[in-house]
Image 1 (spheres, rainbow, N blue to C red):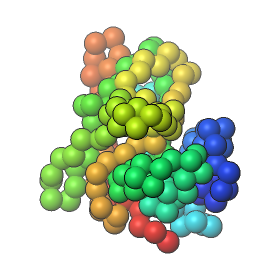
Image 2: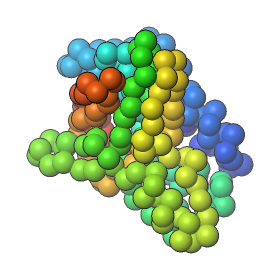
Image 3: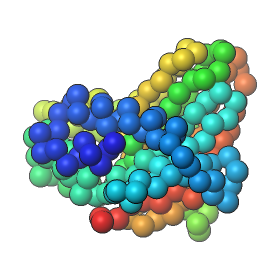
Length: 199
């Protein structure tokens, strides 16, 4: 689990990857449907953190909450500077898992995805490329922690990493996302997401 990985002060690349993989496992745990039938939510009974999952047209998306303190612990464990830790801890961060369960390849681009808050404002996600520009300017690169900005998945492929949005803790929103296969664009929504506050 992400929260289990975070508590380890020696968090490293392998630890993060193990934590990210746990997002996929959560989808097989007993879940509770929320108000939107396409979005499934699950609360971790130990940490209280939520995971939301949507599966549509063979594309599975899962987002798991991380608290600001979780994020700080991860990047401090990698030796990030206080400035870099403060910067990413100021974002709403989710552990993200995407999987192609369809019979054909699919392509996504995070640049087209939007977080839509309850006042109908739309926010772009900060992409892996954007974070890498910041980190590389400081002589470091934690890009492997961020969900890839654009990928093509063959059947059975999957990807994972952190998704980041400049929203305050406690903010509620829907994530509107798109992907394509054979030139056809699909749209889905993960509903009733919430940026975690520190527990």
